Image (cartoon, rainbow, N blue to C red):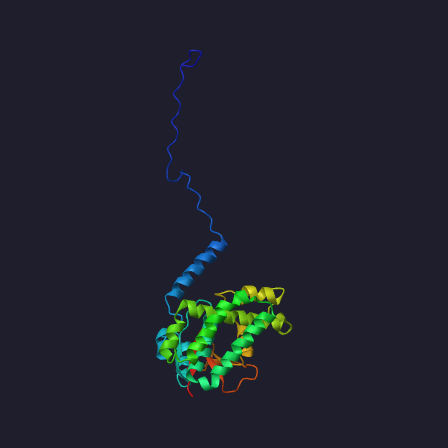
Length: 284
């Protein structure tokens, strides 16, 4: 009864929640940064599953890899007539630098009379260039030490065959240290020649220093034509980059980069597939 003695009806029972009426908890929002980080983690895991630098591989390996890709297969078939084998480099965004660095030391191993003194002079010039554009010695010296130690090991024959050189560059500590150094040198070259190259980077940055800090010096950032041009010129090495892609025609296009005062026969071969560089060895 209510306070006035009037009988009252019992309160109606609250309706029970059903799957249709139950309130679902809000799903957490995922930011663009989290998506990019997750994608990067997946790529890094896939990259770590591969060696930093592989043993020499027959081009037949590419035939199996692209068995369902007719445009690639036509180009690979023609490539087998001009190249003997290739080496894979880990697809971690550093593949261009790793491929170039390995080839740069490899030629010292195979022909020290021609390349050893020159390589030592190249490192000395690279050090001076770095200091001239404002890199601190404290920042570069550890990476430079690894690069110089590797040359000394070749000179003393502590490294005397391909297996020993490969073993050295399958070490993260050694391989990555030299890659960092060569990234720094590429940055220093571009900054020293900013007047020549700034128009090519304005899409990404307002000045060459900012561009280099974010796109050249940072590990894991892919190289493009500008980086290849800088390396080729600084180290006076010609590079022939064979493009393996799905474009029309049976021949893979070869883009050539000429180093300052480089001998015409002094060429390092690279194999480019979309987003990735490997080393390729041409028939002589």
